Amino acid sequence: MSRYTLLFILNIPFIIISLIKLVTEYKLNKVSNRYFIVKVMFWITIMLGLMFIEPIYIWLYNQKLTISEPLSLFDVVQITAIVIVLYISDRTRSKLETTDRKLRDLHQELSIILSNKKQN
Amino acid sequence: MSKLNYKICIIIPAYNESTVISEVIKTITKELKKTNYFFRIVVVNDSSKDNTSEIAQKNGAIVINHILNAGAGSATATGLSYAQKHNFDIAATMDADGQHLPKNVVEGINEIIKRNDDLLIGSRMINSKGMSKTKVIGNKGLSFITYILFGINSTDSQSGLRIFSKRALENLRWETSGYEFCSEMLWRAKQQKLKISEYPIKAVYTKYSKSKGQNNWNAVNIISSLLKRRLLEILK
Image 1 (tube, each protein chain N blue to C red):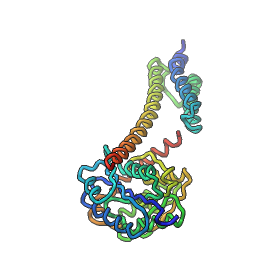
Image 2: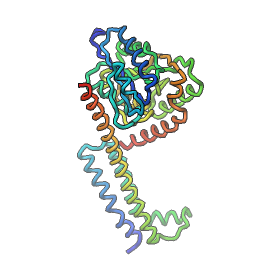
Image 3: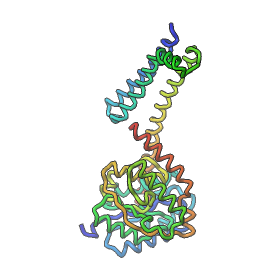
Image 4: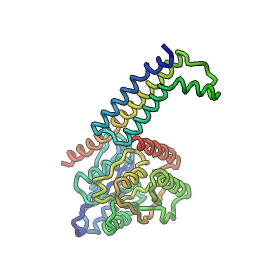
């Protein structure tokens, strides 16, 4: 199996999972149209990059924009790791934002309720 | 609506202000008693380490104690949420360090009723006499950044003296919890299509208020936080 195909096979599950989650969030009205479009474009760009990595690499090589050796197994692992990190960091950021907002609202509500109780 | 029918809530976010909070509450109470408004003073104690809370309570203010130190933006949000929940018609925020003149607060309340605006900002920059040059540069710089990032033309985007209509109380929410909330609040008000305007105020700078005010270096944190907020908004 070509290393380019291996790279694609290793990474495509993360992209598909991200896209399915995005569509689910969109269908459940949890995200705005703009958020949905930007995120879909982001993951589709990565998917297209992986699908056409061989012609892209050959083109870059012919244009003398890269002087590196052809894709090694290590490169495959490295690029897969980058995609995984992108996926994890994106999920973590959005979860952190939600938690932060919930904590702030909870703190605010609790402070007001406690002060009301104290007054009564 | 007659003046008697307006319920006014004065919100004072405070952090370690035990030396001046008593005077601030006394003077604003005295000034508001001259009017016919029904009013309440609410001090949001942002988890102070001193006895700000006890002193404020002794002076007749309603005190909301934050369990954690959450920042000026959060304390202001708590105060406004209290005003909204208790059905106040107008809320005014003022600094706890004594830099705002009580008569300017009352002027702002009268003005928002007269103009029928939603958010009225007390601008120290329309007449910046008495303000140090570094503060003038800092405030003008942050107002410029607010204009660049959010397209809001305000002469004093960082002013703590703000008057809110009932509509603003019901619709205005923001994400940031530090001093950057001043600019973000204007942005959110614009997004909510609230009517924003300004009126001139005079700020009193004592040795104490100078020591308590924002450091110009804090502008770096404010700008980076606003930039982050603006970029994240593109994704939302």
